[in-house]
Every structure is written in structure tokens, then in C-alpha cells.
Image (cartoon, rainbow, N blue to C red; front, top):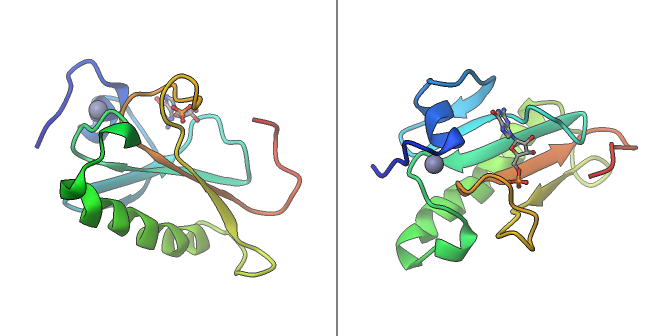
Length: 119
Ligand code: 5GP
Ligand code: ZN
């Protein structure tokens, strides 16, 4: 599986940087964001180093689908209220103009009672 020795999320997945784990399987890792913007705010990442959604190919279709199917399950487990009055937001910042700071593909899942912090 591809890994970048300079990537903070690769180090985090490898356990070289501590994180608060939400979920893990062979392909995916999920952990709480260190600077949450909402009462529930975690990230789902592929374990393989993919820099961003801009590098996604047909080979990643199943992986990306798994992330989106996992998101609502983990959101409820982490304390988001149920749809439709609860719910959550899914964000994939991509590239500098997309607001991406960490260049390892990650899906933000944010939820919980409003108001949330700005950001
Ligand atoms: P981006 O702006 O790239 O979409 O979001 C990167 C996110 O990663 C930010 O929300 C930031 O708080 C989070 N983050 C950056 N470094 C770390 C870290 O070392 N640990 C954790 N848990 N989150 C991090
Ligand atoms: Zn990485």
C-alpha cells in the first residue's frame, strides 16, 4: 500500500503520530479532527496515500463509495442526531483553492447540535 514518509496522515495511520481512532479496517482509518468545527468532527481517510480527490481514478471508485457509506454509520455512532432533524455535513477540501491543508485525501464528517464554530 502506498505511503508517503513526509505525510502527516500516513504517519498518523502508522501510529507514529497519536490520534483518537473512530474506526479502522484494511483500507480505511477514521479519527477525530484535532481542531473540531462541530460537536462531532472526524475524518475518514484511505490508508493508501492518495494526495487528494483530484487524483481519484476509476480504480478508487469502490474505496470512495465505502467511505460515503461508512460516513452516516460512524456519524450516528459518534453522536450525530438522526436524519432528517439531525444529520451531518461531508466535506472534501481539494487543492489550495479548495482549502485543503493536508495533502492526503480525507473526508470531513461534521455534525451535532448547532451552532458550530466558524470554519
Ligand atoms: P483540510 O483543510 O486539509 O481539509 O483539513 C485538514 C484537517 O486535519 C484539519 O481540520 C485539521 O484540524 C486536521 N489535522 C491536521 N493535523 C492533524 C493531526 O495531527 N491530528 C488530527 N487528529 N487532525 C489533524
Ligand atoms: Zn499520506
